[in-house]
Length: 159
Image 1 (cartoon, rainbow, N blue to C red):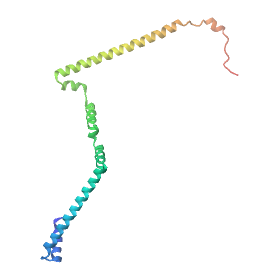
Image 2 (image 1 turned 45 degrees about the vertical axis):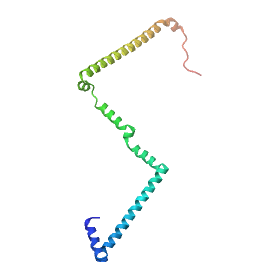
Image 3 (image 1 turned 60 degrees about the vertical axis):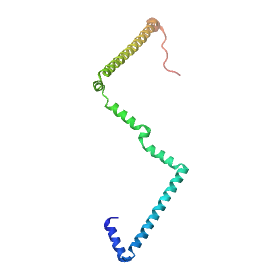
Image 4 (image 1 turned 90 degrees about the vertical axis):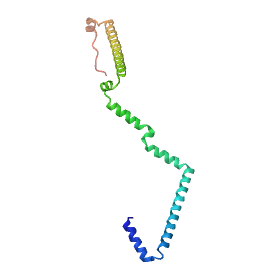
């Protein structure tokens, strides 16, 4: 309600009740409003006490916490994902201090050496497997062309 509505209600009350009984009416109205507010406050407190007694407030608090991603660490996960998406290896080395950049280069070099050594071992394994296959093929005797020609042809039809 705005001021104009209150002013209109006050004018109607002044006309209907009269100037003599108007203060008494406002006092009774104030007491009634205070009593209604007190009853509403007592009702609210009783409901809160009942909720505390049954544990509903704890459940409500837990449910409110489920909506908050900070409780699950989701904001940290989002930040980490954003940092990973924005990560550029060359830029990071320039943004670091000289000692940190040197350590990062050493780690990158060590990782490159490990990768090269792993690749060399895999290549050596492949070469050994190929050599073993070739040795097996050489060890098998080749069929003699004369015996192959003398062998009876197998019938491909089955009865």
